Each structure stands twice: as C-alpha cells, then as structure tokens.
Image 1: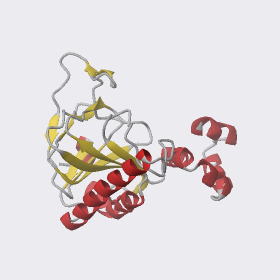
Image 2: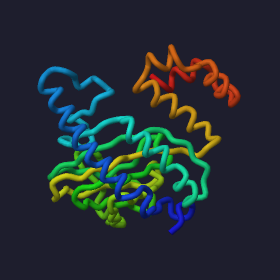
Image 3: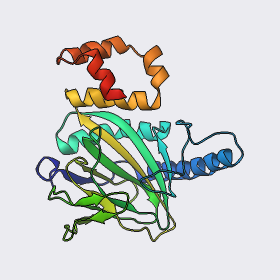
Amino acid sequence: MSFKKNKYQVIRGAISKEIANVAYRYLQISAEADHWMLENGLTHTANKLAGVFNDPQVPGSYAKYADRLMETLLIKTIPIMQEKTGLKLVPTYSYTRLYRKGNVLNRHKDRPSCEISTTLNLGGDNWPIFIDPTGSDNVIDERKGMNKHGAPNGIKVDLKPGDMLIYSGCDLEHWREPFQGRLCGQVFTTIMQMDSLQSLICMIKDLYWVYPKLVGKTLNINAIYYNLEVYGVTKSTIFTWIQ
C-alpha cells in the first residue's frame, strides 16, 4: 500500500507499545484531572491549555488541542512517516481524544490545515476507522450524520496500540461507527509537505488559534510575513486568513 498512490497508508508500530501505554494512561489521568478542575471551578471551558468535554464533533468525548506529550509524539513520528511515504513533511498540530461508549465520529473530510492527517492508536478497546478511497463527496450534514444514499461503505482499518493510519484528510472521507467499547485513546496529528505555501499559512492559523498573544509578542512575526510575501502575499491578506 502506497500513500502516494492511494492517499492513505497504515504504519504498524509507529511508536512502541510501551510508549503508547504511557500516553494512554497519561490521557486518562489528564481527563480525570481536567474534569475535577472543571467541577471545582479551577479552570473553564474557554481555557485552551486544558482539555474539554464539549467537543462539537464528538460530544461526550474528552478532547485536548496541542497537549505537550501529544505534540512530542507528533514530532517523534515525523521520521517514520517520511520514510514510509517518501515525502518531506512538517508538523502542524495535534488533537487528542479519549472516546467513551456510544461516541460516534461522523463521516467527514478535514479542514485545509489537515493536508495530511494521521490517527495514532494509544490504547483501550478496539475501534476501527473507516476510510473511503474514492475521494467522492457523500456528506449532506456532518453534524447530523446525514450522507447521500448509496455512499461507499469504505475500507475498515483496525489499529493496535502504536499503529498509525496516515491519510489525505482533505480528500478522503473518514469516520467511525458508534463505539461499543468502554474507552479508546487516539491522537490525531496533522502534517504538511515541506516547502508548501499552504503549510506556512495553516501553521500561522493554528498558532493564532491557541496562542494569539504569544504569536504577536514573542514570535518573530515579521519574519513570517517576509516568508509569505516572497509568494506575493500581503500582510492584510494574512490577517484575513487568521481571523
């Protein structure tokens, strides 16, 4: 199976089972800690450095954007992804979820910053992901789980702890059926091809989304502007993108 040919590829043992087990237990503890802090008024749902339980895409799951450990796993897996795909890649962001019984991930395609997406199994009960290799558009309403009649059944992919599915999330619809297990931990990471204008744009978007003040005050934003202006992009256009 070739990513360049099929736009998806399974990488067995992208991380060791030992590292996956540590990350899975860490995710469980993070969910317990963030739930306790929310219940006791020590954090709030708008705190982007804490996990949330109101993820609109998968209500009822615990989700966290750019967790430090998950970002580390994203960086750690870049070399094996480059080796397996033959592409030069740069990391964009990570998003992790702890799924519970009854959760559903409706059929969808990803947003532009997810040029190349991965899902990495950390542990828990088995929960296969389905991917439609045809690239067709079958979603009528993602939030309501409404799809066109006769939508392809897709290919079922089972991942063990440490295994990764890498796929073109913007091109291929993917989903998970209602979860019948108790818990399942997955980290979703996004990457982009190096030397891509789109990758620079999307990294700025994601940095502004999480750390708007940090980007403006600490990072050399003028250097980023310069790199984009090489492509003929103006500052006013950049601010249109990141709003």
